[in-house]
Each structure stands twice: as structure tokens, then as C-alpha cells.
Length: 153
Image (cartoon, rainbow, N blue to C red; front, side, top):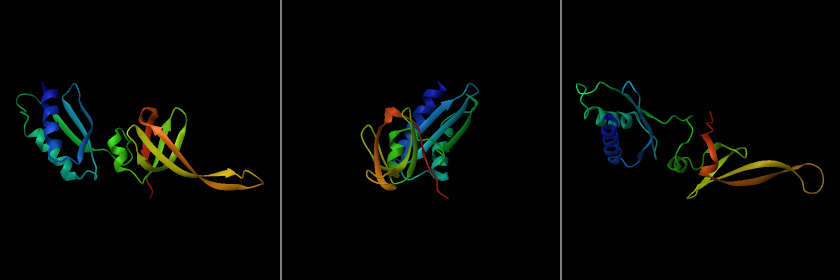
């Protein structure tokens, strides 16, 4: 079966470079193979080509016609797996949960979640005016509906 064969080839290709990891993999009904990868140090065009060749050169087009697309997880793409959070420590994230939306710096990844910090303006406990306070929030992976890196230009 095409899916099993591609999955095996994909595992072999990613095993050759342990900094790369799989984000998404699918085969549509018309045999369009889509692979999305990410890497601890980012993903280069060469990385995508390496994975693509490892799959393509081991499949026989005479046996089954297919098209193959290997891409990297884009900078604006949501974060899907815990390993992606580790590579984004120090960056600003926007994290949506059922409880609300948080924007803060990702300072740590935990076994089952992340830690965000940010500064907020709050009323002074005594008197008029506001003070800047440092906020910190631990969020479990299971609570995260969507998380994205906030890009600065």
C-alpha cells in the first residue's frame, strides 16, 4: 500500500537527520503526497529536497502515479507539537485557550505544557495610577487550541 511505503521511507529519511521532525503527512485520493516537516534549527530548501528525493527515488511511478510535495512548517503556521515549542523558547507567542488568549514570551517548556511571561499595566493597590507588573502563566498542551509565533518586522 502506498501510504505504508511512504511512511516507512519518510521515517528512514528523517532518521538520517535527527534535527528534522514530521509535522503532518497525508495522501489524498488522487495520490498527492503532502509532507510538512520542521527542524530544531529550522528547515532549509536542501532539507526538503533530501526528504523529497528519499521518498521519490524509492517509489515506482509505473506502479502508481503520484505527486509529492515536501514543505517546511511556515513561520506563520500554528505550532502543532511540543517539540516545536522548544525551538521557539525566547520568542513571543499568541496562545489561544478556552479560558482566553495570551500573548507573552515563551520562557520554558514543561513535560506537559509551556510557561509564558509578559508585562501588564494594572491599577496600583493603593492610590491612583497604574504600575507595570510581570505576569506568568503555565498552560498545559491539552488546553492550547492554537499557538502561533508573533513575527516582528
